[in-house]
Image 1 (cartoon, rainbow, N blue to C red):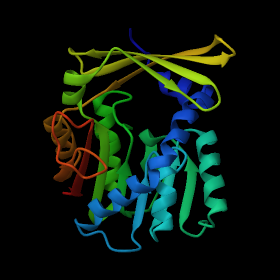
Image 2: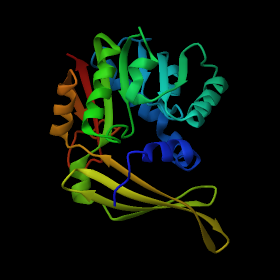
Image 3: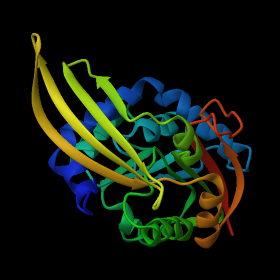
Image 4: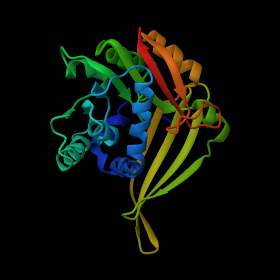
Length: 263
């Protein structure tokens, strides 16, 4: 199975309401995750009240809390639906003075913020790997260009080594509105792409009615590969943890949350 290059537009734009359910599920843990982001950035020198670019920001799960904590935050996302949802939270929490939101493509993030620099940038929830490795390098290079001389970066991706050892071929997620997401998984060892088929169903009584099928394909990185990618984009790796509990990286941990400094 292979997903075409247009799958991101299909998922985030044409069928964004389906993926929105996963964003909403993540709200439960978003404050604790944002606190972990702050700890990582602060122990590498980020001052209170600094400016942070969240690219892409989705529905603002992290950006909202970072603004609540007193940082000046700008978020960008491809989906107008997700930005609208983030704006809802911004208005509800009275964060308009500290949180800027705009619709835009992370592949052209530098064009979205001309003549701007930030003290730090974050790229969360496996937002790399959607296209080619060259595109990942370009995104990271643009984020470098958008940060100050002492700029910091956090990148959050799935841990390829964990997938190799523990990934199962099927997963099921049930949402509160009766939607079920059935996920078929395959790790392509030749390309290090995680290839997924998502079937969405709506439960009606004892029946499941098919709503949509999405094919998703993205590159996953091991630790040494991510470090090499960061260096190639002009970043110096500083620290990596394996979870938002700030545990050390190991094959047992699902994530790589990497901190890097502008070279």
